[in-house]
Length: 155
Ligand SMILES: [Zn+2]
Image 1 (cartoon, protein in one colour):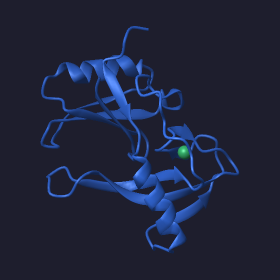
Image 2 (cartoon, rainbow, N blue to C red):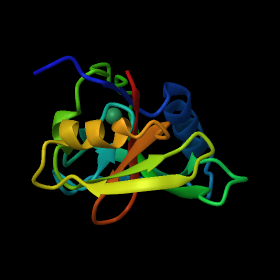
Image 3 (cartoon, protein in one colour):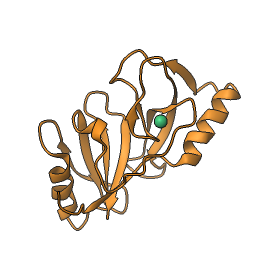
Image 4 (cartoon, rainbow, N blue to C red):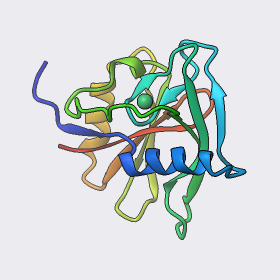
């Protein structure tokens, strides 16, 4: 595989840790869920599917910050136990090669393009979206539920 033109950005560790603190504190918008499916609960911090028997925290995350027309806050999971932040940032996460939609945004957080990955090489789809000089970043989301999974920046 050629050198990647992109960089994967997992959820910041501070956000995952804050969610773990808030669930301990009983925050109403943070829930602990016991995983019962091998491919239903993607952890946005280690970028792996949480496995049956593990616990995840479900909470709202502002993937596109407030104050923009495309502002968006939506539900995401992180492992309830500390996990290692995804470090293979030059490689597309193996667990999410299918079932993702990519949304391209410009520097003002406007959505300017979108593609479905299913059945195609995600690297090629990312490359196509990044060919537009206006693309500032690309967000990978669940194709079925629409939830934010991770961000992709230029390398
Ligand atoms: Zn994790």
